[in-house]
Image 1: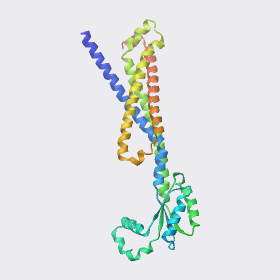
Image 2 (image 1 turned 60 degrees about the vertical axis):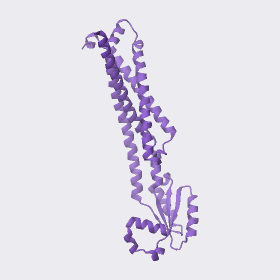
Image 3 (image 1 turned 180 degrees about the horizontal axis):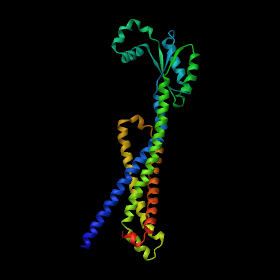
Image 4 (image 1 turned 90 degrees about the vertical axis):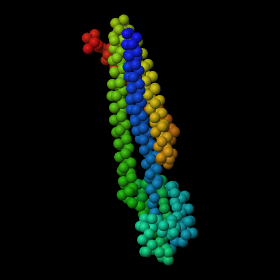
Length: 295
């Protein structure tokens, strides 16, 4: 009978540790993923800003050779990410894609010359703001070769506003997850330590010091945190692998340095919360009297 009881107790303890590792790993994974999003928010923001296409409509008198030279000069400017010439034929195709084949009834092959040459412009992320674009508009207005600078103010404002909101939301989510992870890990460690309350009480009776009582639980807590952090990091790597399959361009924005920072953050957070929870739980249970232990 004692052997059967020992097996049952070992099985229950193993299940408790397994469920603890799984729950801690999931919380640390969510925490790490949120931290990764927050750290790369600027890179993602810059990516979308630099994908924003602006248009420079050239004057009707501009020929294609002059337009090519203009593209080359624009490409050398510090604030320009990329400049491409949009020929009349390309402009015609874009208009047909936008408005449909019926557009041919208005602009046919014989009237193709009415379409001006234009330049598709992508700016560096730091210059994609309403103020910067307003300054560029004044600059291009002075250029006789450029008849119009087209950009959508509302789109730029919405892009900057949404990115700021997303960063704040992710930051709030990280704070919330830190609180949830502390509560969850604290409860988990307290339950594990509470199951050893009789052992703690016995150690107190024989005169064991506070550090001697806490030492084995701190060691177990450290092992639990390391295992959980490894699983959380592996889960994060697996998630990034699948994201790479679907969003290759966005995945390329993730730097190795930031990924290592996130993994370090996962290990440090897991270790700190587990050790703190263990210290609090052991101290609380050590303070229980005989009646409270058997309650």
